[in-house]
Image 1 (cartoon, rainbow, N blue to C red):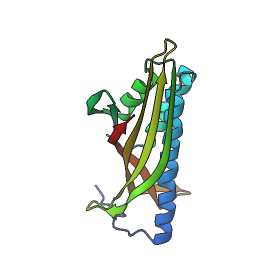
Image 2 (tube, helix red, strand yellow):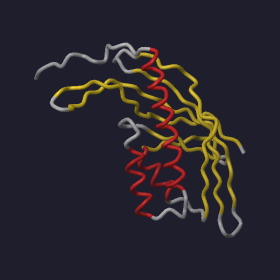
Image 3 (spheres, rainbow, N blue to C red):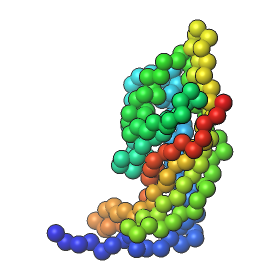
Image 4 (cartoon, rainbow, N blue to C red):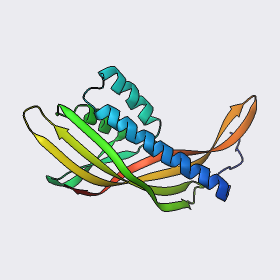
Length: 177
């Protein structure tokens, strides 16, 4: 086994950090859009499944999503696929999910393994409504862990290094009406 030179020890320049921050925000906005599509009861099953696969590409392996409710104190965590499949199967006739006030709350910090980790906070407004008049609405503050790591790809026979952003756990910070 040949040891590859470690790319993880590279520092991120301020210009590169700005580009990484933009990429992280873009991925969070993509996730917001995908969750809205998957949760929407008008989305055809095949399309929702296609969007689930796209969504999974945004995440680091093993990432989990927190789920909360006004009616239960505990927050439950599911792997991302399970969360998305549960979202698709919610027992409402109409579901609307909107994310707003998306912002970095912690700067990227270098970890001992060379990766950088940060946190983006979002607020999610969830509305579920049934034809029989049942309605549930809440707003949840969520913290999304962001991982930035050095990767390599081969282009034209040459190895090119680049920084990639993956989403990690999405923790529930607070849920209210």
